[in-house]
Length: 217
Image (cartoon, rainbow, N blue to C red; front, side):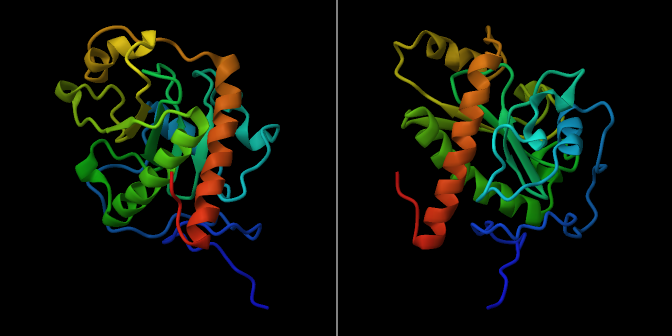
């Protein structure tokens, strides 16, 4: 029987034969591939890819939040050869995650067509996973470009933000803070570890369901 291998152009199969390999060759981009001062480039450099359909256990050193020290701890929820996703350290709501390409791409127009396609593919997967992990059935997908548009880190990224009921205290500030105004809460690291594990497991479930015929909320 032929061994299934990871095809980086498609969602990963639920197989233990995952080979992280090297990022696929892309057409030249207008931006550099790494910025030593960028926190998202640092996250991309310290966390190796794993098969999202079969993630490592939470105790694995591959997922150690302290790998990004002395910068803030990072709670990883997805790591492919081309993308990383992690919990926002200043979440607008429980389950707020960020998804970005590994190479340094300051704005959306800087990503390659292949990166853009993979970002779109995993936005759907992560949206379904966050709904499953948080139990919140409504969410926003937000992407800012440039300081005037409230982009804080100049490394292109998407926000996936659950929207709990408006009576939730954290959600009352949502409209203002989503675009750079108002106060945001710091991530509770004790809560974050378990949440990240739930999202990783949910990502794997979504990918397996996709292979079997499609995921439905």
